[in-house]
Image 1 (tube, rainbow, N blue to C red):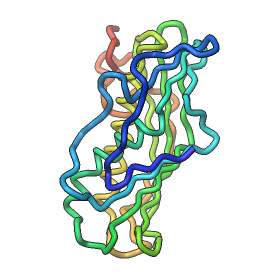
Image 2 (cartoon, rainbow, N blue to C red; image 1 turned 120 degrees about the vertical axis):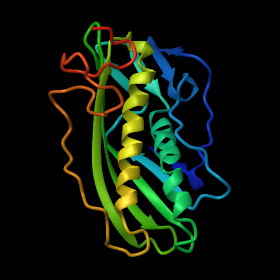
Image 3 (tube, rainbow, N blue to C red; image 1 turned 135 degrees about the vertical axis):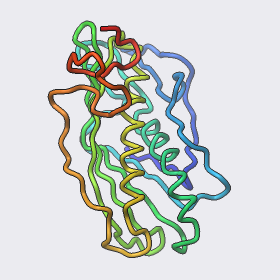
Length: 219
């Protein structure tokens, strides 16, 4: 599946509320409260964000439950697009036609253990020129987050992870040279956190219980 967010504008279309289908509870992320928006595009922003999944299911199933989260790619694209607005605004006019940020989702997992929802997302991002397709740079990043919520109430947990992905990619863009192919801001190690939930950084592990104090976390 492939989603395109041209000029950092994501066209949102989703049914309201959770929809039951074949015994599953489908939670549409785009119509859930709190969809991650960190900035608003001004005029025509010269960055196209394209998301695509590789062996990742969308809707995203939550193992240990009958819940699936729909609009996964679109919500992730929205988080990345809005986070990248300041970078795109700053670099407006530096390249004819602007850029394309191709984001490949290479890992997406959600599980519920009876009390806590755990989410892991990993992506590979490639920056190219929109005209000619010249390769400029590539990076990978991941997040893991969790919270004490019901399986169908985990949208804020997914949003926290997606927001961190957007911020990580924006930090990488800020270190890249957007004019010259082959020059990137470096390639951070891609290590999916295995021990500490909440590596997205959106919620600190203040109580040092091994996971983030995400929405609903009370211990």
